[in-house]
Length: 320
Image (spheres, rainbow, N blue to C red):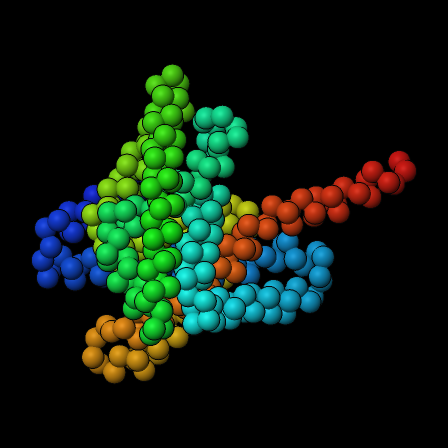
């Protein structure tokens, strides 16, 4: 049902992009604002709850100060990177995001085992590869607004490198998509249905990324698909109801919304969207995203260490 809902949202957004009007733009902006506030921000606000069961058994009561110090330190490094080395920061951020999105996707048993990491990386980065190929000029303009003045050549070099990577990754993702279709044709029952729905989802997302503005398509993907699935997995891991999870994340989410509102008021001063707000928003989101994806990237290693820690006494102890 979730995938079907995202497919419908994709085509509704595509329709809004193809048949643009002021009324549709207002509705689209309102929907995206709700998605970010209700799903996107809570997804990031959940990182401390995701980290606690992995860090507290090792660090004890010091887990929270350590977590916050490392999290904020990485965020500061990323924010400074936009000013010190914008090209390297753009390339590293985009490639890391593609890897993270790919790791979060279902590891479907398709293709040779050695190619599956490449398939996941290619699929996870579709939200990056597709706009770079089909809307390269707009992506460049957005990055030009984000990066500080005088970094035009660096942005151009980064965009060229990422576009070249996109021309490799898009055929790779297409091969994975076609191979999954062949696997679905040979299966039966629910597995076949799920594979076909997943293929329809990928096709719908690619169409969305190719047609709609990246400022619209990325929030749709990030909030409606990536963040929603991440919150669902966290809820299952914690064994809580949706109400309990939402209640625990509400304070940080409300704080983030208030800070965004304050920043918008201070920067905009009633003049509408401008270069400063876009830059502050994008740099701020990327600074928070990098420690988020690093946390989720090392989570399997932390889980494995905890499993070894809990089973070690059983191996060493003598039976009662």
